[in-house]
Length: 335
Image (cartoon, rainbow, N blue to C red; front, side):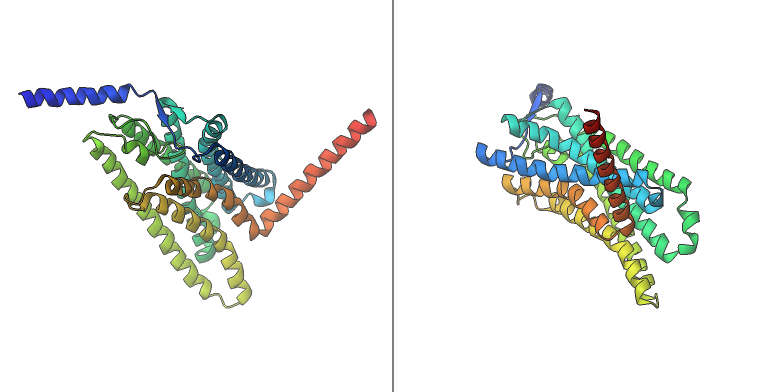
């Protein structure tokens, strides 16, 4: 009886500790103020490059009717997820580094977890769909218009956004319902679920473990689909008689394959590394690798080997410069 009362008292104390947390402490970018400001400007430069690159791709695809194809439609959605993930993590980290603080509110942390997880899962879903697009274009070219019509593309894009939204909502609600009794310091410069789970002291983490197992099956399932699709793609490409045809087919696939490899490598290294290998500086570098680097490099990778996209970007930039020049001339003549 005494043991039961003691257990109930301990549980109430844990719940009380969890409910008393009003904010979390994030990991600073560096130990010293000078190095922190230096890393801040480097961090800002990379983030601005990501915003500029993805913004240009979105503008080019939306404005040029030659790019209204399934591949570029999904590329536009991919750029939107990259913008979303950057805007979820960078502003708070920048604010904290600039003002020398570490805090983020409880609600702000939950919001950040929800949106970042949603954008990451959406990006993985879109990369899987884009793999299917490449598979149909190369292995079933005669059925491309049927299998990837405008209605089918809209449905796949809607599923790629809606499913991660519901998944992230369930994941976030389950994570933040756990009692927290190991302080409020997170070993990351933004809020993420593994760091929140380290603060939990409840046996109800088994619910979270169930979600993680389901996530692993989904992750592995998409990975197997991507690998199987590329095996079929490479087999079809090697059967193309002309060298020019093989080169064109490889050029269609290499950007997507590079982006998938970058995404899977950084995310896997962040979440699959042993728990014993955990140092603040290493965790910080890894988190930057998978949260900031892919959104920055994705536009560059896709624009390097995509002549249509490069032509659209060049045309758009030329039009913008011409409009700006005409506006300056009109202003000068008016004054």
